[in-house]
Length: 458
Image (cartoon, rainbow, N blue to C red; front, side, top):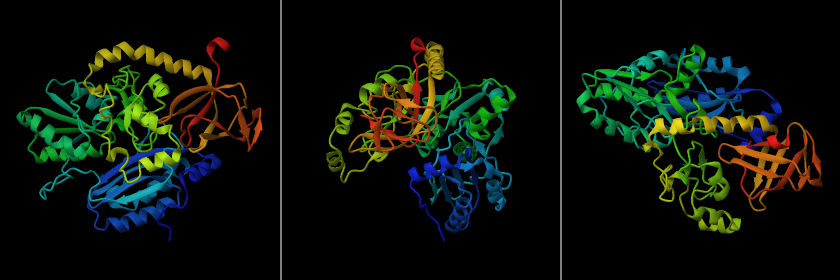
């Protein structure tokens, strides 16, 4: 019985593209008492694997937390698999604001001690005794109440690119750090203030609301469905957004734009920016904010040390990181000493947003009118620095200007000087052709390839 993935991410992406079907990125959670998380995990894997459902899911004795990608035509069948369990009957599924067929490329279901690590060891704490859920308009109304304190229960790298007006945004790395900090700050307001809280999809502030009720706070409220559901409701009901900026998400997109406001800055030069990047050095992968200019100059790296490292022979890079822990086990997200402007959340958000709103909107508009999607990345050969793309529409010829774009890769503009088409040198590639050409930077699976034409050349 198959209880594991048999395909690589690249193979899965190719199958998705060949199927030509739309997929939905969604998330959900439920707190419940699960007696046998291991059996629950296995049963879910069997049911969801049959539906070609993909994603990252955590299960524990206290419930389930899931971020997933499912075929749109299997939505009802997927919901039926949830209805098999009493605690998930009628569960709300938060559908992403922006869709991407490659948001998840594996089905990973892990058994954890808790679905949200809270650092608590209090057997009297009842996570199901939660605060009052508020819909978007109700949440907005309470934000306007001067008797309200609103708290963002996300991490610093999430809140620095977008948050609700007037929110307390703790400078924390994880959820468990925020609970004692906020509890200490608000001790004098247990009786007479409305404690209003939110997070991305609702799972963290649901536990937080139960925690603060357990701590004796009388008036505890939370945003139902988090920022994701709030965004859906304000669009459907034409409600003014009191959330400003981007909503950070945990798939490869790294963010969904809610408003045009830019409330953070490039961690390297200080320019207004809210695009997250993972450092290109495989021994680092620091998550930080980087503008297009710094991305080009630093080749997607967070420091000169990492920039020098990625230009070393591949074998030497592997040797340097041998035995080292990598990624955020070494570096704190967005808090490396190499970053000069790493305290974006400390800026006056209103002033920065006002100064940059028009400029950022104009830049995006210019990109829309001058680029045509023609293909997607399939592979990058690190040793030879060769990128492979599949041409999905139009033609590409030597001399064409292209834009390579992706959430982690950023945006790179270049002129095609030489291409190999289906393994042989050629001047032109057509729809369905597989092309390769030399690139000095790494591309990621499903990065997009655009043919561009500058307005002056149109």
